Image 1 (cartoon, rainbow, N blue to C red):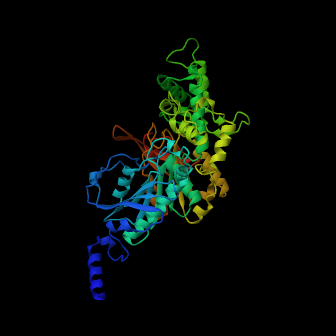
Image 2: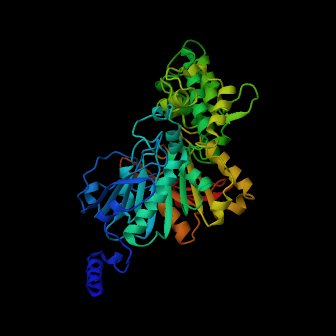
Image 3: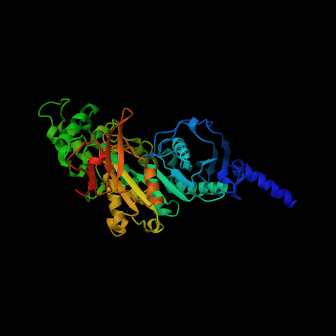
Length: 514
């Protein structure tokens, strides 16, 4: 009988793909359906043949990743779906995709955007095509906005941090079971909410990931969502303050005329908007309203958008203002004709629990203090103490576009500065934590400046080849063609033109502190 069992074992192992032979603990994909995991119901464990995945294109592409690879080009993979219930009111959906052949031995997780509520399937496909075992979660709900949290505190906790950690633990267990070994490296990649999720992982669960890419992080959620109302009040509380979208090109051009040449070249991009001292009053109408100028109330609204949101009683800064140069994104962002729902939903459904709450009534003193007290560090990911993460060799790559129209870029500078201070200064954290500010780049990507680069590849080189990123060459793609490259530099350095050569080519710039 033992001899027969041995023969069957040899046959089963021989049937495995070559890279899985020799792993006696490796399981078939279908057998993962019965894998006993705490608080987990596995709803699918299916081997998908090459080119046969029939999914919708919904989902969020991982920031910095190459262009989305169509599903019909995917290799064969083991697809596992599960629902996690760490609380009685939890229903966290996750998916884990694992290459049937050619696994690179590594694990990746991808973050969400906004209030989440969907699985990032495009990002799964991108990671799978690179040989990764990769996972995503909806964070516990499948609806847009924050209505899911209305009188459901456990679901809010899932969104805040629990879903990502539970997904990570369960996905790694599935990877270990399928391949018979744990991944040799684990990476997180996310932007916006995904950036916040990555920072929360580094702060709260420092053992979950070896490397974390946290782009444009929405990590100071209570204050970020107060800032969303700050801008909405600036342009909408008084109808005369609203700035029509047709006027933003005029405002943007005035900013460029005032500050574009500060970096030594005129290229339509501010390399460091914090050096720009622009007052929108310079384009105030001298008479009646006109398409080529701002009225006095519109000037005050623009000033308020550039300025930090502040506590009216103490004068303390709540959240930084949007940077000069970002004006072309305001009309479809925070200064849209209606308040940004990501912000209003928070106050309606989480803080006040009044679906008919009026954004014009927000008190930037007591209401923000109430939000901070209610959150108690659950959604907010502002803890600068990353000693445990750094101490185990973790690497944190942050980047943020200076033209971000949704999350003020100075927020990332503020967090990075707080971490550097907590860990002994920028010189001491450079081997583990680096921030790259992207001139002219919008939220996560896009804009007038180069923002296209492979963030995961940068992290791989840093972690696996010990090549810390002294600069990252980013590309700007217009109509499908690369028309500008520029080095992104570790903060506080900026890319400085060397005085000769094409200003659209990265090799003619050097990173230095200006």
